[in-house]
Image (cartoon, rainbow, N blue to C red; front, side, top):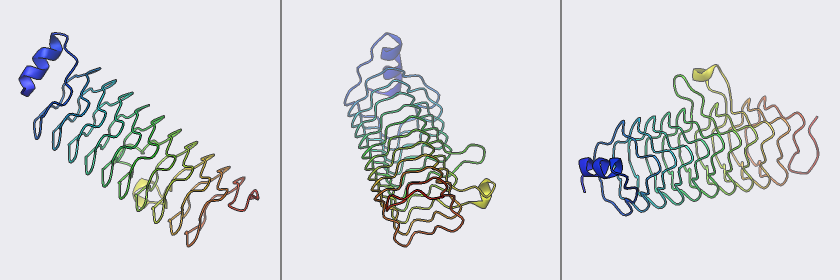
Length: 237
């Protein structure tokens, strides 16, 4: 089935497109809201500026796909493969990304507010702000997620749950390109998180819960820790 046929069937009311193969095709500026694309092969597909909100993409392969500006709000991407995908400026509000593979994916300026990224792989992922938008990870569930070496400079992680997350050598320090701001982890939960050798220069961790966290070798220069619960359980004044 080609792109034209899919859009024709969708317009006629069809929503089941499971296991469909659409490698390296152009699907920009299209609407497939509520479609079922689970297990679809969408590798290297160009889906920029499209509306895929409420779409089911469970276990879909979107490796190296161009998804800039796509709307995936409340979409289901459980166990989806987004390895090296470009999600710059994407709308991922309340999106389910549990156990998704986002290794080396670009999420610059993406809105992930309320998304569920528990147990997902974000190794070497780029979550820096775009030229006009700070990456929003507020209230995101990142329990057990692997963010090793991820670039989180200036990302907003307020109230995020990062319990047991791996942030080894992650960069959460300040960036000149974004008004010298660092990551905001106000009231974030980081119980048992691995922050070894992470760059937390000037990061905001006010009232964050770091109980049991590993801060071995972490850069804590100018880090704001007022009211934070430290690894040993004491409250930082």
